[in-house]
Image (cartoon, rainbow, N blue to C red):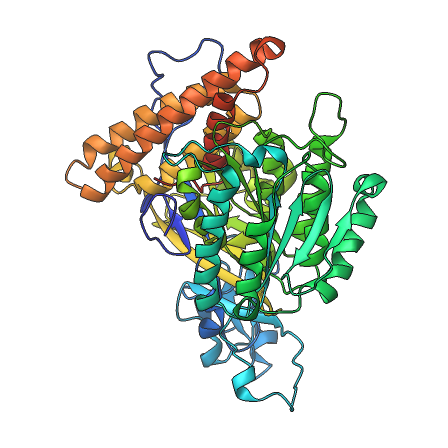
Length: 586
């Protein structure tokens, strides 16, 4: 289920139709002066990854066949024809047949058996199988193949401020709120995934590795080591063997009991603690998780974010990238009413595909569950989206584009079942079509193909090919009547939130207003569509939050020294971060 609450499969277009000629763009009456114009239409598509865990059920026989010119893959709508040239006919029966590429028109000769022809628009191919190690001495009961044996590391703030009362009716301490939520969620985890290894890393003005709490001697890291990345990482990697041996089914009781006996004190060595946890997780299976929970500003060792610190942002970017490379996700939980510099810490989660949660102590139980549920489904993900040569991408990084703007390739890294990427595209201009000797006049539909390379959690390297065919229309109303509000709204919130976070707050507000008007226009044409109306209501709320967040960041940028980072700013920035990552929920 996506952020918006509607289930849609694989790759979804924002309408059943591609609009060839765009009508006049009507500016919003309160558009900010000097801001660039916004193009609004239904030429949007969204790609999600929630079905990847089922890849083994959909594996194709044989190898995929690709076009020699544009790289498009042979698909369920591709047509095979007999060879037309004498030299091809001379090869005799059973020789290659001709396939004319639907994307670029190139002629390809391919040999394909009947059972290798795709039957659906969504196909998986096994590129390289994971190494299989037979352990004959291991009984079938000891090899629960369907149970996840990856690791979860909780990196918990145990600084003095965790003693402060939480904003709850009982006025219990912040740490007590986390204790209660942790006990409940670990008990659920023990029942659902008993093979998972769960460990604790606590941080004050030092880092303490308790792991699964079965080792009587926790590892304490302090002093100058807190400023040395390689030593911190290696300390964690070494601790994996000595302090993370047991599965949660075996370690639950001692783990939860020990954490409740440890009293908060000291400063906040968050950066060193995350580095140590990454070292531990790097020794686990792909898909391992790190969940960081803090109530304050990192102010000790690497990644310190106090006024005198240098290089904090670059440090958290580096840790996020290292996690991404190792197939580990990092989620960050901060408490409302506190200042933790979420705009910096968020890079841990954004780069590694974790969650960013700004929570109330009273709701931390649900939020902790949300972070645990947001598990990786694949790593080393690379996505290529190929459009028909008559189309080109819009508002994408030129460095990601090839084939005159018709091919987009992104290195994504980790993905979860909630990960979603959206794209906009345009029809090429008449001069561009004429230059390439292309005509869309006689076409009734246009193909779009997603090519997803990924590594599964079991180590298989795979290729997923999704092909959709969009019908063509020159009637704007027809495209809007068939519009998928969810896909458009998801694109708009991600795009506007990203602009606000990058400092372009004026354009963020313009885009929110313009797209809001356009979606209301679509809503008028879909008044009897209950699902669309529900999504429009959600979009209206989220869009207003983006506008308010952009305004708050604009005020902050105008007087940064006078205002500083406030808890209110952190709250609004957190909303924007979640919108940008399509993980904001109601």
